Image (cartoon, rainbow, N blue to C red):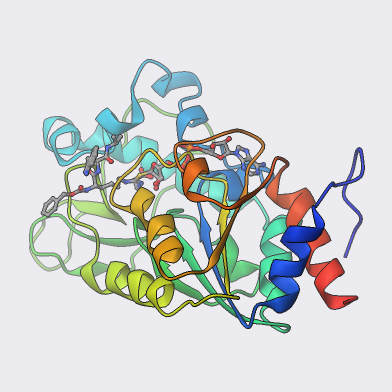
Length: 261
Ligand code: BV8
């Protein structure tokens, strides 16, 4: 596993002790997990065309109903972006940690970088960018998706072969309920943690609910909650320990240190 670029990664003995002593680890990941792969975080996703739009305004059923080609163009561009990037050393390290500990990955990310790194993702609580379904009849859609190489203002969504409705991305929009099974699985995995187990909270600002409430479930289960994020966040006070550095630098170091005992 490649050594992280830049200054040495500082990880406290407490963090290492907690991980070495853990039999189970739940990793809660957000947009920061994929940032070093080149997928902009949600707050930074607004480059170019969509700059003037608040993502939580664009990622809504209302925005879709008001102008499907405009919202579809944004998602089609993001599909192209995700297809053009690779998992980073942070994703790979989490996949490797599963050889050493019982690991469950719960992500708010709609990309497939955890899976491409070899992780089994327990729950995509905000859905997946690469799953498509009909907005009207709900039929899954696995037809071709036209992916713009450059951001385009408008792009007609594909048409549902069943009902001629518009095809939408399989993501959870603001104001939409989270996939019940995925969220219940996430809560169950966190509740199953106990003293001596670890919950890694990686690259999330802790602003979007109900996902931002998940670290608290690990806390009340008695697990050691460790935040990996260069910045202080809205969930920092739910975490016992903090590693103020990036996912692609910290996670490989943690796995190496746990492996080397
Ligand atoms: C719902 C898919 C109800 C779409 C997404 C309680 C209080 C307040 C508001 C609410 C509440 N309950 C519900 C709400 C409303 C709303 C909400 O939370 N609004 C927020 C904005 C206040 N929640 C909802 O609408 C949810 N639905 O509640 O439904 C309901 C119930 C029953 C029936 C009907 C309805 C749905 C929320 C899901 C929305 N969909 N994504 C898409 O992607 O297009 S959310 C989307 O934004 C992402 O999935 C992610 O979850 C979120 C972004 O957050 P982060 O991942 O944390 O990323 P962010 O950019 O914010 O931060 C990045 C972090 O990484 C930073 O801290 C940074 O420092 C760090 N970082 C950067 N680089 C690195 C790094 N860390 C490590 N390494 C690095 N290299």
